[in-house]
Image 1 (cartoon, rainbow, N blue to C red):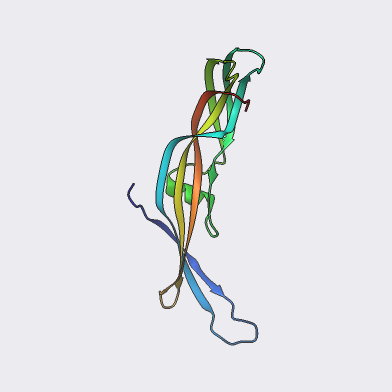
Image 2: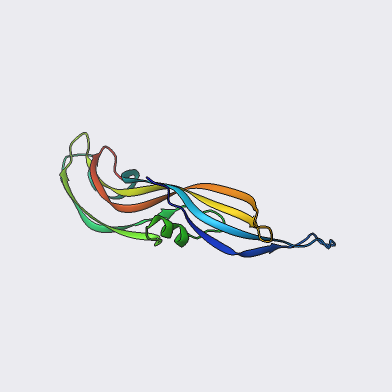
Length: 164
């Protein structure tokens, strides 16, 4: 996946001189970008069960047909918002996602449960903050914060030995 650089320039920020000193104030300009983006699509999260059907004592024909809500997780760093990062990834910033579950299977004695799991697009990226001296334009500091986002896209149903 190619490198896509997106940035935002923030207003200059002044930091106060220590009390009792007449030192001039340092003023900084910040640029925040989301870089080194990659995505793994269709990753099943077996730790996130939305619904389950079955019984441990016998095999049954299971059917799960319902809508459930789950959470979209977006990693941010200081000075960035969830909406900013979501926009740079091209995903929604909404926290809650509704997913329609529709699956049927006959359970077995080995796998007596039918579980519905969340399927995500998993994003890895770096939130990069560059701090510049406002007067000289020189780069003072760069902070890179590696983050992840989990964007629910669907449901995978599978037989399991344990209920969700």
